[in-house]
Amino acid sequence: MSATMTAAHQGAPNGAALASATVLEIKGLVKEYSAGKPVLKGIDVAVPAEGITAIIGPSGTGKSTLIRCINRLVEPTSGSIRLHGAELTGLRGRNLRLARRRIGMVFQEYNLVERLTVMENVLSGRLGYVPLWRAWLRKYPEEDIQRAFMLLDAVGLPEHATRRADALSGGQRQRVGIARALMQRPEILLADEPTSSLDPRTAVEVLELLTRLTAAEGVPVIINIHNVDLAKRFARRIIGMSGGSVIFDGPPEELEQHHLRAIYGGEDWL
Ligand SMILES: Nc1ncnc2c1ncn2[C@@H]1O[C@H](COP(=O)(O)OP(=O)(O)OP(=O)(O)O)[C@@H](O)[C@H]1O
Image (cartoon, rainbow, N blue to C red):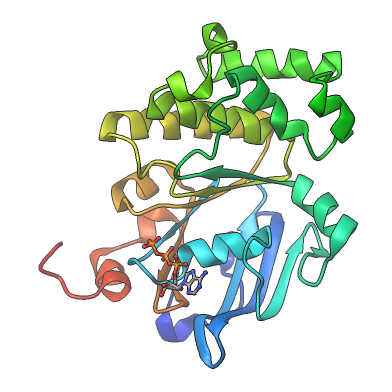
């Protein structure tokens, strides 16, 4: 397997991607928030069906935009995004809602409903599946409740089911966020800077948990992360972005200082 780099990165998926089955294939993805000023300049990425793929790059380079184009929180300007071969761009209404059920998301600021209990927050991961009247009446199927308890146990919060979300620490909230995302039984999980609001030790604990649980559930993860050391430690694959383009795509052991200089610019910080 070899990493691809600037000029060599002409859009073809690299050896790492070809070696493993692909769950998500992004081709020629462009996003312009203002006409003629692309933030994403034709992204080509093939995400493997297992493990963590980390997106690194300087602030403002389009990492969040890329992640949010996948579940259409951000509308792509052009290009293709295929999940298990099915095109996601252009979906509307019910078809978009059905596609979103297949894509879990973990957020930097957790996005829990603060006044609801931990259990209700986890169960809300089923909202795309359960009829709304059931959710309003809090009548989730028994199977969902069992799974929510199992996931709360797995994230180390079995005793917190009835606590309000706003009574939890940041690390605990993110554990609830992970349980909620997995409650959805997603085919892929997006994590948009999931550890940026956490202290360094809690960040490692949350990434360990994310790695373990998603491996157990067989869910591949795309994570947008600022900390390069954590990306190298937990990801199987690194995508380095700069100026709205992918300039490194390969396994962590191939990410060298010259790549980091190309991604982040300069070298006085290295
Ligand atoms: N909703 C929006 N409307 C207009 N411009 C936006 C919007 N969201 C992001 N941008 C711009 O797009 C560019 C890329 O932003 P994005 O948040 O994707 O970058 P990022 O690499 O995730 O940055 P960070 O690491 O700081 O979160 C930035 O210049 C940003 O100002």
